[in-house]
Amino acid sequence: MQMEKQNQTLIVYLDGELDHCSAQSIRRLLDGCIKDGEIKNMVLDMQELTFMDSSGIGVILGRYKQIKDKGGRMMVRNMNRQVERVFRLSGMNQIIETM
Image 1 (cartoon, helix red, strand yellow):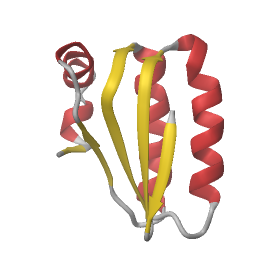
Image 2 (image 1 turned 45 degrees about the vertical axis):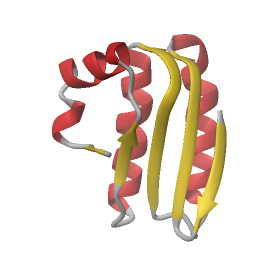
Image 3 (image 1 turned 120 degrees about the horizontal axis):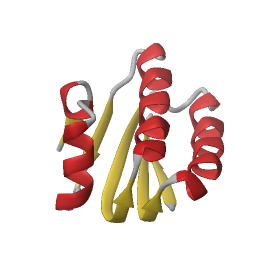
């Protein structure tokens, strides 16, 4: 995972798998960045993400709530078919914007 800040937006480049094994470490890293007063919005770039399960959905949903509580927006982009299917089946596409 790589991250970059652009003004008040954190762009997160996810890669590999977002599953039970990786969820906790990713959650901790993102929480630390969100607590930074400068971050208001988040973009999750999933171009290199090959797999996501319910643990990944939990990570995304929790960070979405934190960003929303700060008055910001969360967006996702570049999902492959498998990741998009999990995203859609979970209903996340109804609350998080896709680019």
